[in-house]
Length: 223
Image 1 (spheres, rainbow, N blue to C red):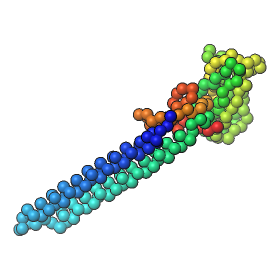
Image 2: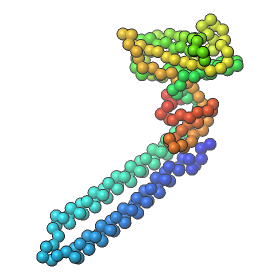
Image 3: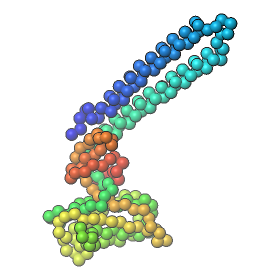
């Protein structure tokens, strides 16, 4: 389950890093001013430091300050994005989504899980093929011209002869072509229900009710 620490943990880490960076910057400024005063106190009266040299050193410190301010701003924006992403992901718990995958499950009652296709551009012809574990085609469907986009599809769990197929897992494939017969990029989509969210070494992940993990970027449609 998602906890408050899950949602705000990344922001706390960012705040800690920001505080540490500020402390380090303060120490750097103190050392710079101490060094500059020491140089001025011990300079040769007959050959004093050039004003341009002093100005250059001050300008360098100002540049470092500017870079640090930019870093702090980026850290704050990153924390806000992490929070927004976490809240968005938490809102998906319990929802069914379409994501890249080729598996369809047929239950004992003959009902098949929802699947879909993702067309990267307009296609004049689209063919959807479903195969069993042995690679045998059990169902095939040709679709008319389609615009680019995501299309949820339903299968009644019956083969081309109208007979209900055995329960189990099946593979779906999609092929598409344009008006000139050239291939169009298309991707098969499978469905799943979001059970929980988790923070991993790979970032924010969505745990599926039937097992497996996906990222927010994997989601093609929320149903």
